[in-house]
Amino acid sequence: MAFSPRFLDEVKNRIGLAEVVGRRVRLIKKGREHSGLCPFHNEKTPSFTVNEDKGFYHCFGCGEHGSVFDFVMKTDNLSFPEAVERLANEAGMEIPVETPEERQRQERAKGLYEVIEAATVYFEKLLRMPEGKAALDYLLNRGISEASIKHFRIGFAADNRGGLKAALSRQGISDQLMIEAGLLIQPDDPSREPYDRFRGRVIFPITDRRGRMIAFGGRILGDGEPKYLNSPETPLFHKGFNLYAMSQSIDSIRKSNFIIVCEGYTDVISMHQAGFSQTVAPLGTALTEDQLKVMWRISKNIYLCFDGDTAGQKAMNRVVDRALPIFEEGQQLSFMLLPKGEDPDELIKKYGNEFIQKLLNEALPLSKWLWNRVKTANYLTHQERSATENNIRTSLQPIKNQNVRNTLQNELTSQLWDYLKKKSASTKNQKTTKKREQINTQLEMKSGVSAQIDAIWIQQAILVGTIINHPDLFDALGEQLGSLEFKAPELDKLRQEVLNTLASSPGLDFQALQDHLNTTGFSELMNGLLSRQVINHANFARPDEHTDVTRKGWEQTLRLFRRNQLLEEIRVVEEELAENPTQEAFELLKALKQTATQKEDAEEYLSNFDSAKSA
View 1 (tube, rainbow, N blue to C red):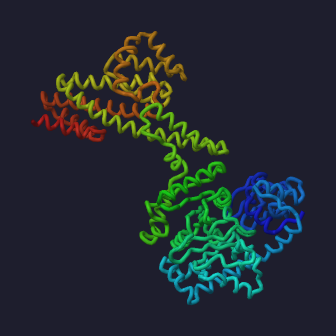
View 2 (view 1 turned 90 degrees about the vertical axis):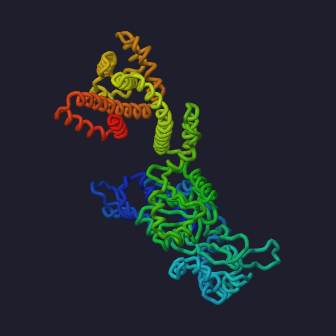
View 3 (view 1 turned 180 degrees about the vertical axis):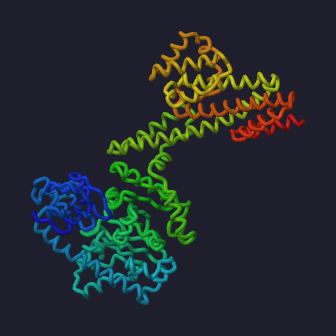
């Protein structure tokens, strides 16, 4: 079976050579090439290279070389048609039926590149003619430089129905060929003459990855609809596969190893002018799976830079929905969040390229974007947390790659617990303020010594009670608990028993530890005062609380306990100094206060303490 060059080119464009070779050879990327051990002969030093840009592989050791089709033929012992058919199926392409009509279409397709090139030259010339002045002024006023006009080969289509048709006809190009190239529209009434598709528009030529002209996008001058008009689907042009400015961006993409995707032609051109020449855009449609695959074969890192409005947000969400099923390990999708109502072109004009670089540096990774999609309510109840966890699992279900799905699941779950910690801390701060007021009132009614001991006793109970309820934290927190000294004898005995039991019986669960303590003389403490004091003052110590939240609360309690111990020492030395003002006591008090100022909240305490003493 004979295949057209266009069909073979499209198969090669859709199936990356490095991807196919990488199934048989462990490749290492070096610049624009990949290298590895040759699969066609035994070697210890890599001499086998794959050049994705040029579309061939070569072994400097044995001389084997060829295209992706050659590689599949040799490694899988297939004929050329069989290799083409296999790769086409992988790319989701139908094998063209070999008919006289198909052969004729293939012959005509060879000339379509020349037709589109001729039209490009015509539009370029017209931009510099008197009738193109308004279009040229429009471009210059938009900040598009002369250099960019030439680089992107921007042109103009006059507002008449036959200008392009007449110009190309004089070059011997038939109406039928211009219709197939998408340049003319054939009316439904076959008796009527075909007419120019693009009229009264600035013309943005579209190329394939090799830089060959394949289609056009036209932006109307003045009022009218549609604002933008693209070429229709043709044998050369597929909107869902090609990308605007890919050929102009390819070198920068390979050098920087990332791609930026904007929404429109002028956004792309402005980004290139600002130094971000890795920028491309879809062609009048939402970004497709094919376009994502094309980009990920060139670079694993894609940044979306869509307009900062509701439509832009929805467009990025649609990209995520299309990307998840085809996501593979190593690929990245990030989101540059533009200010509301702004687009890249406007931002560059207002703030310069530094602002775009800032957006690039601060881009959200996919996990953060997904988190914003799945989070619900305030997560203050078990039901709300469960709903969010279910949303996480459901949102990741389309991902076929198990490793990618697991990684994102872990990242999203981690973000959920980070949020819970902050929310819990905020809620507890409010509750703590109120409790402190109540405790301070109670402290005023008691002696200083007994009041401070009560607060310390509660903190000691929380520290040991939390470990009892969460013995899985023993490995992380046991050493710190063991270094403490509890002044309450009953709590210190309990602390030592817990440490000894968990050290000698690693892996003991909550219920088993409680049963052991109840049978070794601590049942009254376990079932009475300790249980009430711990739960009333520390929700994080509950057995059903998440381990990360519990650990955070325990560590915060430890800091408060150590601070209170220090402040109690300060109070005792103050009293001694008042009764017996020795230099030794003064130096000790000075050292204790210096240490206290480095502790959380100690400054405020000492200030109040000194003020009360002076009064």
